[in-house]
Structure formats: structure tokens, C-alpha cells
Image (cartoon, rainbow, N blue to C red; front, top):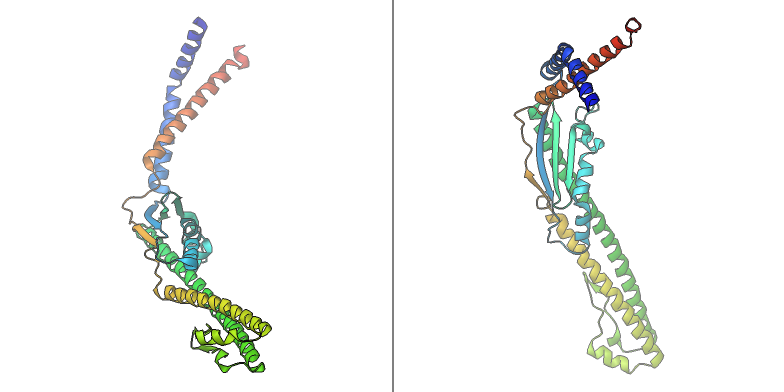
Length: 306
């Protein structure tokens, strides 16, 4: 216990004797921190905003699948941080507007996206963040519109293919009727505008009953194939119309909501002078203590004291 008391007392005495060195170190560190914070380090201003992504839309089916896959908080966050995207917007090559100054945080539970952009000019920080958000909305909307257009084109090709197949099947059906000198009433109409006339009427069914068994079987099989292809054709047309409607009426506003518009900062976000000075006090004290103890060690181990 006495040894511990003596050791502690010696440490306190060493620190007390070196108090001037410690105080000078602290003051020097504070002065350096103050000079850096107030005069040398440039001030930076941070504009903040909040955006929410929602998939609450009246669309359904494949259109809703496209919207749900495109409009997500993760997709928005990754794309808005992309430096290539930023360069295309601001047409810069000198990295004036950099993704390193853009901070994006996603809350998966709420699909809320917190954004902030730091600049040496408070108004510029707000303008850049506003532009990034608006351009990203337009980009995502344009991307989805392109997807819808490609989808509509694919449905157009598919409907053309199906209509050609149906016409070929009807031609084969009618050819079978004519080649076997069957009643003309069995002849099927191919198409009128976009509506298929392929269902057998009661009169046609009655005539078909009196046809030879093998021919009747062939005609019935062709009829089933025609009906199957017709159902596919109608489904494709419905999907095509749905896509066309969404191309004309689609808007990003309900899906990407700006909850908090980019702010114009009134005070600089950095440097934080008070924090820097507080840290400098700790660093200065550590340096001062280090000098004091090294000096004590040097004195005690000096050959002159042996």
C-alpha cells in the first residue's frame, strides 16, 4: 500500500513539476486547432433532403412487376450516387460535383432515403441536391417508359405471330371443308379488325355432327387449336392495351415522393471548431505528459546521475 502511495505521489509530483510544459502544449494545440478551424480549413455547407419510394400503384400484372423492380429505394440510392450519372447531368470532367460529397442512407423498413450534399457554397449544395433528385426521378421514369415501349413492341410481334398462326389454322380448316365438299356453313371467318370470329355456331355444330368420323375429328382438333391460339391472342391484346395505357398515363410523382425538399444551410457543417478545440486539448495534454515523462526518464537514466 505504501509503495503504491509513493508511486502515485511521485507521478503527481512529476506532472506538477512539468505543469508548465503541459499547459504550453495544450495552448499550442488549441492555437493550431483554432487557426485551422477559423482561418485555414475551408467552410463546408451541407444541404439535406428526404425521399420516399413507394410501390402503391393501380397497375397490376406484368406492368406492376416492372414498376416494383424498377422503383425501389436501393435502386434509387445506387443510381443517384453513380459518378457517371452525376457527370452526365452537370457536364463536368473536373469532378466539380462529386459523389464523394453525396451521402445517401436507406431505411429498408420505411423505404425512406436520407440524402445530403456538401459544398463550399450553401446555395450550390441545395441546388445540386435538388437537381440530382429531380434528374434521378426523370431517369427512372424514362427507363421504365423504355421498358414499357419494348414490352409493347414484344406484344405487337407476339400478336402478329399469333394472328398469322390463327389464319393458317383457319385456312387449313376451311381447306379441309372445301376439299371434302362439306357444307359451306362450316367455313370459318378469319378475322375482322382485331376481333376473331372462330367459335362454331349451333348450325355449324349441327352440320359437323353429320360429317365422316375421321374428317370430323380432324376439324374438331383444328377448331380446338384455333380456340387455344385465339385465347392467347386475346390475352396478348389485353396486355398490350394495359402497357399502352401505362405508357400514356405513367407518372413518377406518386412513386417517388420528396418528403423534405433540399434545405439551404444557414451554418457551415464543417469544420466544427468547438469539437476540434476539444480534441486539441486532449492531444495537447497527451503530448505535454509525454514530454514531461520522457524528460524525467532522461534525467534519471543520465550517466551523471549514476
